[in-house]
Each structure stands twice: as C-alpha cells, then as structure tokens.
Image 1 (cartoon, helix red, strand yellow):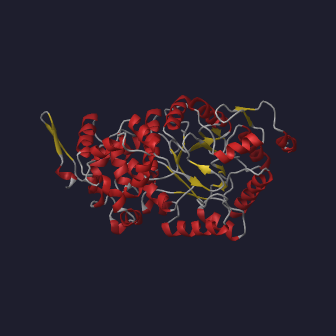
Image 2 (image 1 turned 30 degrees about the vertical axis):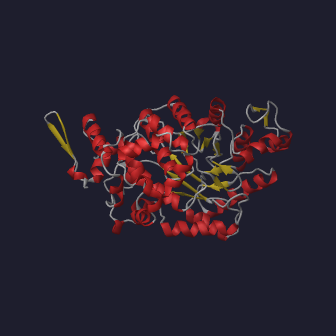
Image 3 (image 1 turned 90 degrees about the vertical axis):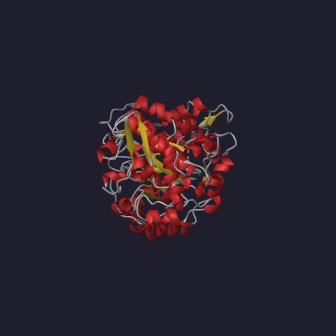
Length: 466
C-alpha cells in the first residue's frame, strides 16, 4: 500500500501525502531542523492527521519502500540486506499503531524485545516513535536491555555508567590529569575515559592514549580509554603500536552524510578489525564507540529530503552492524537551527534513546545544549532524569557541566551522581567494586556514599599536580 493513497478529511479540508518520506516527515513532532529543511507539517492539525495516517500503515511497508534509493545508498543496502525476517515475523502483521500498542503491552519484556531487534529496521523504529508520547518512549526503552563488554559490563538493569571527559583546550597533560582524577573521585568513568583532542593528529592521539593507558594500568581501573579522533588517525596509531582500546567515529544515516565525515562501511570494518587484533578487552570484545545526533545529515545537505529523526534512526543501523561498546546521541550540540529549545532537545533525546535501544544498541546520551539555544541547565536536569528512568546506558561527566574545549554545556560528575542517587542506580559492577576497593565509595551497594577524605591511593597523584 503506497502512502500517497492516504488522504484524511478534517471538516471540509482533505490532507494527502506525496509518498512515505513525506508522511514520515509530516508526522514528526515539531522541530526547527525540519522547518529549515522544508519538510515539516504546516500546522498541528496536519501533523495530527499525518500521525493518524502513519498509525494505519502496515509495518511491512518499510521492507518494500526505500526512503533513500537502494541503488544510491549503502546504508539502505545494509538495512535491507541484513534484515532478519524470522525475528520480524511476530510483528509482521501489525500496523505502526498496532506495533505501538504491542510494545507497550505487559506481555512484551526484555527477552522479547532482544529477540525482535534484528527484525526491526530503523524506519520502523522512527515511524512508531513519531506516534508515541514521551512516557511511551520511556516505558518501552526501560524494557530494552542491551549488554556490551570490554573491561567491564555496560547496560545492566539498575546501572548508569558515565563517560569521563577530561577535555582541555590545549591538551595540557596536567589539566587532563586533574580532570581525570576529579571524575574518578566522583565515581565517573566506567563507560569510558574519552578525550576530545584539541590538537587532532596521530602523534597527539598516541600521546593521549598512552597517558590514559598508563593511568588505567597503574590504578588497575576496570574501564577503557578512547581519543575521539577521526577513525583514520586511530588506525594509524594502532599501526604504530599505540595502546588503543576503543575506535571512535561520528556517523550518520546516509552514505552521503558518512562521506562528509570521511568514512564508509568498508573503512569502519577495517578499523574494527584492527582494534580486535589488539585483543585488549578483558571481559568482552566490543571495540567501537559511535556518536550521532539529529541534524547532522541536514547540516551536510545529505538528508535526501528525510526528516532529521528518521535520518538519525538510520545511523543506528550503521552502529548496530559493528557491535559497538557504546553509542550516544549528542542531542543538543549542533544548535537551535536543528533543535530550537529545551522542549525539542528533550523530545529528541528520548526519541534517540528509544530508537537505539529498540534496535539493540547500548544507547547513551550527551545531555547537552549550545549557549545560543533556548535552553538551560534546568532543561538538562529534566532530560537527564527522564533518561535515567528510561534505562539510559550512560551519560557524560565533565567538570562543572561546561566543556571548556568544545564550548557547550553538558552534564557534570555531580549530575551523574545525582541521577544515581535519586533513581537508585549504580555504576558498572566491575567499576563499582573498584570504587569500593579504592575507598572512593563506602557503604553497601544499595546506599553507597562518597568518602569525604582523599583516598590514600590518590594522595601521591594529587601532590604531583602543579
């Protein structure tokens, strides 16, 4: 059934939609990026009608209609060629609206959703997302459990991990070390110790990776490190013998978007193979770390007329293919041209987390905004809390919420500690045991607290800092 056949009358007015791409875009909750692209609904009434039409669409339509042409886009080919028909069969008879109801039903639990994930395409996830309220997105995401492992276990129920992000505007080793120590003393860093380098070249990557590896080995920290540089830099660092744990790359949902990032599926496969060859994981071999974000395809003029939420969901097909340890949406980083205010950022964060988890990804979120967006830290408190309720795998931890290198606002070590305390969440189990061993945390696992004194193991390290 083709979407142009959908027409809905409201009073004397009739609405029609040109194709499936148009229907998906018009059904999307309002956001500035879709207005910028000229694909958004012209009114709340048109959006509601599109959502009703989308709810009646058979879920299997997405297996027969490619939103980006198969012959033009390797992401479309990946989605279509890797689809698991057997996994899809339990829901193959449903409409998008029926699928929503099925996902929310009590009969659908973590095991059912894990078995379903290979049968769901990104476009199916995006479609059902568009007709769900925020509470629906939270409830279903909460039921999804995705476990990944390298030196610890990410994604267990009742756990919230953090990326310790000791960025520095000049990559000063003492500044990085001070931020790193600060984060560890607040229980941050179990997802990854990940640095955005100010000087982005292979020599600097090797220097930073080696520094982090020395600290992880010296203190026997059950975590992993990553320098968030281009994948080709990481591959060259591996060739030179650098102690690389995770390979990072920003990715998008179309071949043209990834081309603008300087990557392809073949290049990512080569990078993963190189990282696996090092055999540095102790409890698992998930070696990839991907970042995404609504608006990246539009900003590269590579969105093929799609709405930005559907483009974002397609990026998760790329991530899923490479079995990553971590994936996160940098939800408000691009700016108000794409997500205008706190309300739009909140909605996008919940959408991205839901779609990623539904597709079987270890989904985290950089709960963030730029200073020219109509948002503030109170908006981020709300989104952080909602994501914690929804079972988000990890969030960012950075001193004072203010990234002095990238110049945007995100979540702090204190914010992550707040989320853990108010929601009864704990770090990854291996990291939690280390925190107690190092006397950073005390008390039992259900009522941990920070020790007020500097743990003995770190007193010497602190004296070394200028």
